Length: 131
Image (tube, rainbow, N blue to C red; front, side, top):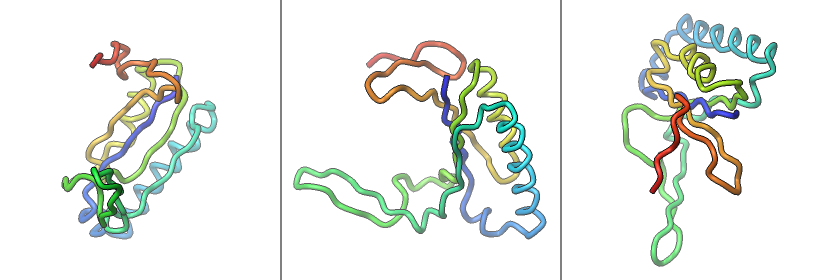
């Protein structure tokens, strides 16, 4: 099953990282990339620009509007993602656990459903809530 591994960090902390801290972050992700490429589990992934470079588009009654900045004004912002294809929800959580560190302070793991349905469930294997 496919999962999104969504990584969150504080942009101010990201900008304040030393060269050594940045090198450590890149080293850890390079190691993870190699491991996942070796198992065939890594489908895609990338880092994202800082939130100040974000534009949000919203639907309003009279059409769409654009706003500078991210959707939510939280301290932690989406900073990077991986799309992985794993044999189990436990494996997806194991992969996600490898990216939490002094920089990535929170990680969401979400099953990816096909574009025509809502199949899938939570990362722990329990069914998704029904509306």
